[in-house]
Length: 301
Picture 1 (tube, rainbow, N blue to C red):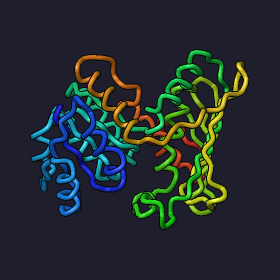
Picture 2: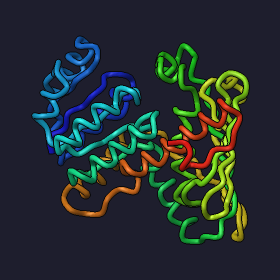
Picture 3: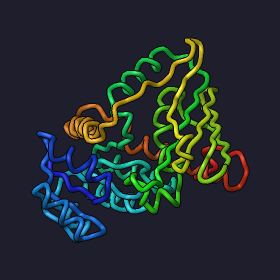
């Protein structure tokens, strides 16, 4: 399958480009970026072609992989889906619920495969854990603390304007929801509050009656950075295990799932529709924190 890569930042270098180049069933055909020089450099490194026009690259491939900020990703993903191209998207799919839903609908209307790269969901340790706790059932609550400290000179993601603007809610919030939703089910109601820096607290009531609490930040004091997730219920308390940080390997697994789906196999759990669900919850949380109100999901769209 011929892939075009959109994006030339750290995530494209760490995950997308090496995974596309290494996959035996993928031809890494082209690169488009907002910086033409960086696109040319990344393309040359992998023997691909640099493109200056979005639609030209879409027209010449079977699938697109996107490593761009969500506001740049969303219109490209929509154009690619409507052109019949399979989608490997980054999280969040978009920061506007209607835009994410439009992408998911285009995927269905044009019968293309899609996967959203919630990185840890493609680690075998996490995938196996979630399969086990879903099979056990009876979970009534969850707690996820995902606090990073990325605005340091040694962190390549700290230079990202969209992360500084949107904060932990939109950057690590998708990862937290990608753990909670498969176990506790769809969210019915959201209450959120903002703290110092970009600290955001979410209290979610799920349609199943379960509740979850998320604490999110990408600008926490370094000594306060932590990543913990716990489920509790009739079977006791279960902590999500740590996973090895190998983003290119995880993206290779996402590619496997996309290729199987494109060939008529089962669709990935983390598809565009799931990505749209995550965006809807985050948009509701943003509204709740801003206006100091409790938000039902059907009221946030």
